[in-house]
Length: 259
Image (tube, rainbow, N blue to C red; front, top):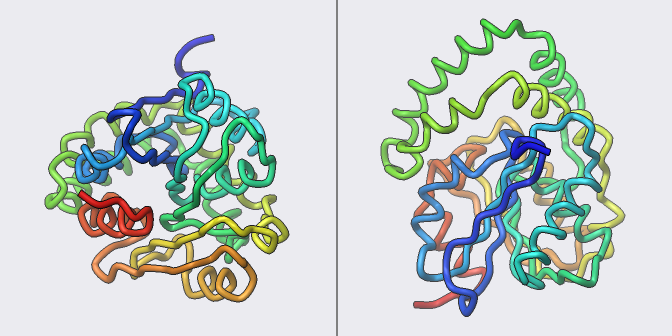
């Protein structure tokens, strides 16, 4: 099996440090978290994943693969930092409750329990599936130019834009498209109602992808483990990339990591 068809893991930092495990969003890799990683370097053991370019995986497959890789690395506990689609993988990990890995808590970055706008998920899925490949490549070029402006205050992420673009192959595009139906079908409200582990929510104020005014109040009313939220005004859906320093300080505070 090629590297593209298997989940990939990288570990940064000493084992003695508190462990923070990053689960990426729909794009499925670690490229856009580069500046956040730099901001937490030396303060946590940062574990990051890249999902495989597969179209046949369920959320359970994602969750089991993450746990298997963590256990293979000798990581049996830690905080989960789940970004957007990664929140669905995190909820499935919590739901499966594999005793080989015990989360200390969960921090959602633009995450959700049940997506608040399911018709929007179907719409994006339709667009991704039927957009001609040359048009997708053209949009990718526009994104790369916009990203260089968007991440001008995040040099590590800026340096990773070319890698981000290289990873957007036809196979990767199909894999991303396959994740939309997983979101549309997923409903972790019952799991959240039983959750007593610490749960935190981090989001950018300008987030049209996951509407936090619908997500956070539900968590506050229904999730026993929900502790606190933070909305960063000058950030968008990809809050870890657009405001890496602020995001890092907030995540470390929730983890109670001090210098």
